[in-house]
Image (cartoon, rainbow, N blue to C red; front, top):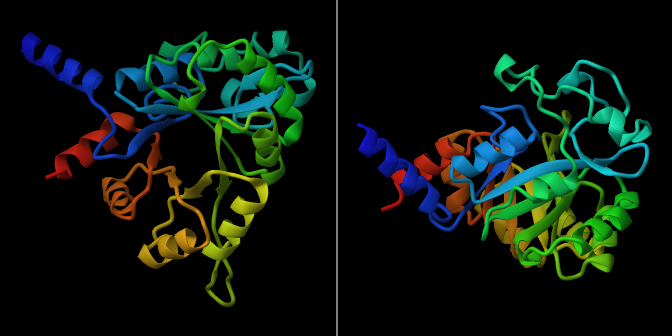
Length: 272
């Protein structure tokens, strides 16, 4: 049994993208570990993720810290507004215990700490949760990093932030992000593929990251994206094997999931 477990672990560690799709760990392996912590990112690598995705904001003293919400109430139990709280104070918070007592003591990591977890050849989707004001500190952080910038992709819902990144960091890929909303009266979903293509072009993005909504994203939708000049897309947050398989068939370059090992196994099992 021990030999079998070792063999399975080695197989996962040596695995590449599942049938061409990047398996990206959403906020790290956040199904099993507290989101946006070093524990979650390290577990993502153990679960053979091809990439990690993390959320980044500016602290009150202008440092880049990894946290999704605008305040810390949900993940730390203490309601500090990230944008007005100094980094040192944010770093005193326990960001792990809410998930499980075994993660007690996990801290909100800095951008540099998350970047340092990347193994050779692995990728990093950097989600900016602010506007363009985060770009100068990001440029400074990346200037100090000696890794391969071709493995980085900057993502954001704020098109102005993406445009600023493409001006300041033209060599780094960027995807504009969008969710979908359905009009209650007409039943129509927004944004349309055409609107997405227009926004991607306007902000200079290299592609789009879309909410994994199968009621919207089908073959025709992808064809319209392509016709509008959008050559690559990824989908988030996909924890269903059926959904992952459907998006693979539609040509998604990446699938962002809270459960990287689970989704990888499902995709590899279905590969002829």
